[in-house]
Amino acid sequence: MPNNVKHFSINADDVPRAKTFYEKSFGWQFTAWGPPDFYLIQTGTAEDQGLHGALQGRREIVKGKPMFGFECTIGVDSIDETIAAIERNGGKIVMPKFEIPTVGTLIFFEDTEGTVVGAMQYEESYLNGI
Image 1 (tube, rainbow, N blue to C red):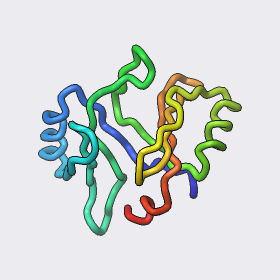
Image 2: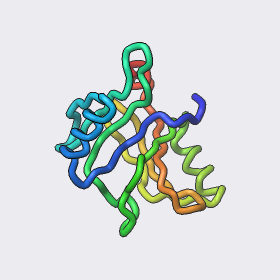
Image 3: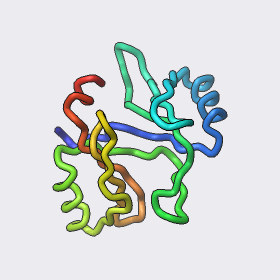
């Protein structure tokens, strides 16, 4: 698998308000999934599906550094090899491996500039269902 951006998240202080904004501004569709105030986002159509996304409450993966902007997750073949490459090249793991059942294994890291990014080794069955 190429290391493409596979997922984005929008972190919001007021999830219902943000959901309404994106529905009305862009026509995006939202499906409740998992924990409270967590929604999967469908940005596209059957012909042009767009990028897989989520809307969730704002959080601090790195203490004192709330997530603003679009949070991106890079799809990788091996989370362990990715962790090694990040650390070898000056990045820092800020959230250790976390398994999301039926989806894959996720980490968050800071790059050399302090940007927090996700990396996910997706389960094959999940990728086939997208």
